[in-house]
Amino acid sequence: MPDTTATSPAPPAHADYRLSQLDELEAESLHIFREVAAEFEKPVLMFSGGKDSIVMMRLAEKAFYPAKIPFPVLQVDTGYDFPEVLETRDHWVNRLGVRLIVASVEQAIADGVVVDDGKTSRNRLQIGTLLNAIEEDGFTAAFGGGRRDEEKARAKERVYSHRDEFGQWDPKMQRPELWDLYNGRIRAGEHMRIFPLSNWTELDIWDYIGREGFQIPSIYYSHQRRVFERDGMLLTEHEANPLRKGEEVSERTVRFRTVGDLTLTGCVESTASTIDEIIAEVAIARVTERGATRGDDRFSEAAMEDRKREGYF
Image: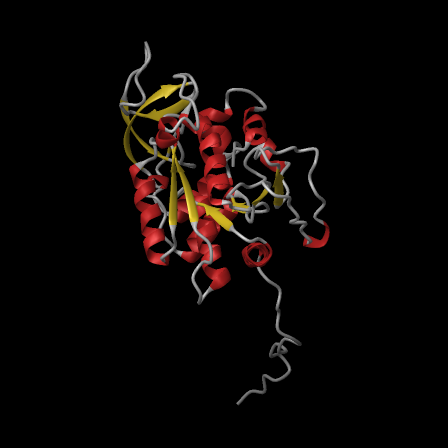
């Protein structure tokens, strides 16, 4: 038998304990969830049923396993949410046994909390609805799924984002977060918005969804839909979306990169029907999902920042 001792590769000197990028992001987010649960008296997780909030739900599940998630989840319902998104929301809530609070824009209008002037979008009316829900239940911290790569205003956010007694955000008055140390001090009536996904990108989100294999709304995948074009976006045919002069409905193969108020959320033409195909598509995209398909971010360059100053997510 030939002697192969001299040519055999040497065993590694030590195991490689370095984390992958996804593992590092996950670890950071789990740390944030646990810090907030320990530091704040009454947190809540804002849960829309979209991909980012589902990733947050999965992270919260992991952070406290085998115990249940120790805080409720809050959805601000515009009344124009996609049925597929609400179905997925209910699946996650039922599977994890968490308490769901639904803050309805329609109910807020009926109660006089917000005013429907016929011009303001339901998406913008979420601001007063959300602030009222936070005040009524006395929440001191609210987890949101914002990421810094989404939009200019969100790029300015800290992980712990202070809100004053009116629920407003001042981008010039943010607290330093050196060495991942967070200052959660608040006065009576104030609260903190918490963004565990701050350092994630859209591609990271899809990589994580692919790795974890959990359920997301079917409309993120390619499907046939009756749509019409408005302001460079493909919007869903719906009774709440009356056609304007010159607009025509056609059936196309599309998917959604982000979900929200269906009267303002556009889809993109796509044949991506698997996670791998979506990842390949996102990897070469040059416009963020909000910039490409959210009509409420197109009113002005500072549209998102203006809404965030008023109390938006």
